[in-house]
Image 1 (cartoon, rainbow, N blue to C red):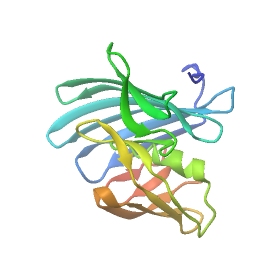
Image 2 (spheres, rainbow, N blue to C red):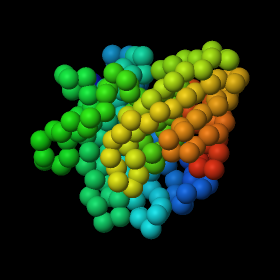
Image 3 (spheres, one colour):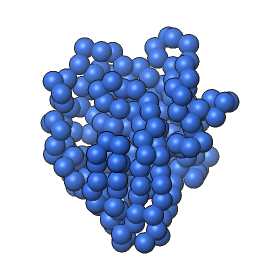
Length: 202
């Protein structure tokens, strides 16, 4: 399992977003460097969408190359108590543990989908952006292990990123009907996510 950072340490980055579409709410994420060179993202999304009041905490650990090692989502989605722990299994697929139940195979390939993408948070787009490190003009297919909302089921999500310039990416997720130009900061975190999220300056 990945090494986790002591939460008393100061984060290297703190990001805050508000929802501008698809419901109301906000999201805060703190990014902590680890002694092994990897990173831990810890955040909380509080929002109301599709008639559901949600408070979902998340923790995602990535290695030095920003490949996801593990993820944990916990809290509430409407009346549902959420406690989902994801990790790559020896079979090369993503596995999930829920509460005290035995881990189960999600059927999603961890090799084909190295990035964890949480539908309800813009924080995880940074993982794919940092991992790919595209040069201006480059384009790459980036299928992700995507936690859908509101069913919170892990599935493969086809995605394409094309870097337009130093701060903009053309982002397409055709199976969910999304296409837009993401604006990011120098650290790869989303600043403007058309129709969904906007970063609030801290």
